Image (cartoon, rainbow, N blue to C red; front, side, top):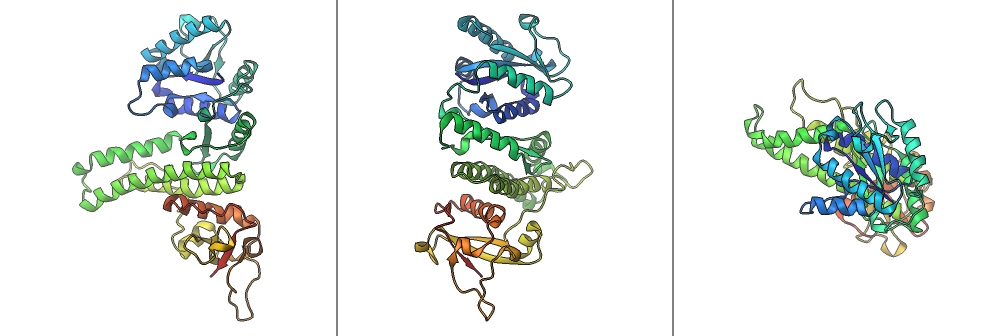
Length: 383
């Protein structure tokens, strides 16, 4: 029973998500309703089950949670469990200047009302004393958090700490895509809400056309697909021990497309958010757009196969790579002489920065299975 249950008001979801992903990054598994509940679940049953299977409950107190009946029910259940286990189980976490409930008013609390990093460090120390970093966790209850800075930059340090913590508990990794959770910030969530609202009210819009309605619905589907690609691709990379650079650039490629799509779906007026405006246009559909995204003036188009038996077969994965990353393999006539072993074709750093992000993106998008994980077996053809 190593998970930490976070009791909170839905109004505090952004800061609670940040807290939850930060704890996961420190190796402390977390139960959070947004990550655990699905349509059709009994809310009461699932919450009581989550409390029962957890090793501690963080009571996220705020002005919003003070008025929440659900938070009060969760606190009552947690205090009953505290009596049963005979040790500290409920730890108050203060999010603003609200008073603590009388039931826990005499307890010391982690104060996040004026900062985050320092109280987080103290909270981690306290949870570590309870043994929540060393107790076993059911493999299916492990979660891998993804957090982004400035919209599209994956927090590699937190990701690697989470991966190391899971490996220490489980030995090997076999994460499902549903176990990859994303800490979406307030700007991203607001853009999503604006897109949903615009779709719902498109018939009343002064900009209405049938094409606009089709565009907005297509944008919504595209972002949903990209969010799925992100989870699936990161799970595959982590399970196959992909390095942090490959994970970072894959996430950057997918997240950039999602953010730009959401930003571009706003109505063209003064109320448009600037969030997402600076995200790169991560288009790798053709040579010109790929050059712009990858930041180079001279690209090579290439394909990679998982092994020699597949060379020139249907399981090729296409990608673009800067010419500077290609080894000198041209003939005297200036052409490439067919497929060669991958490690003989490209500079090694190119695989993490250019090859795997593009290959994996297209693989999860097109549901291709033969991904070239072993570079010692893979073959590359340059065009």
